[in-house]
Amino acid sequence: MTNNLLLPYYEHPSARPTEWDAIIAAAPHLYAVVLNPASGPGDHPDEAFVEVAARLKAAGIRTLGYVDTAYARRPHPEVVRDLTHHHDWYATDGAFLDQVASGEAEFTYYRRLATAVSGTLVLNHGTAPHPSYARIADVLVTFEGPWKSYLHLGPPKWRGGTDVRLCHLVYGVPRGADLAVHGADLYCGVPGMGDHPWGTLPHTLEPAQ
Image (cartoon, helix red, strand yellow):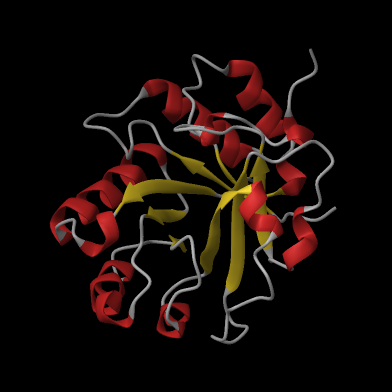
């Protein structure tokens, strides 16, 4: 059984307990789950997320704290504060940095942030970044977008070596679709669309009705 699913699931455990149960039951398939209590860790510990984070850890599932970097525009101390809160409140095993710039000019910003991450670092560029980012991350998200665009993605654009895992995040995915078509090491495909696609689970994890 392969653990190649990196899962961003942005729903509260108290509102979607059955879905979180299904995630925990799928532990052998999971590379990591992204925890996102309030577009970040929030301003205080959320007890429902504390509990689900402990259950994920007990099941052997890596957890990553979600932090938005606003394409290198967010002040460094704010990002570090969120990273610290995720680690202290939810015992996360690493970080999922979102809205990450892809250009060489912003690399110094992220290199500095990487030193504040304890554990696994995932950078969500949503496109193929400058190869320098492979030096600081464990995983680079080189595609995020709808299924229709994913079908026309074309040959891989990554030229940064093989020491980093590449991940594709795809939404609007129909049942039975093959996300391995573009050869990513990790992936997640969900049926949701619109402003909140990551509030849905992959078809294979959907609880039985």
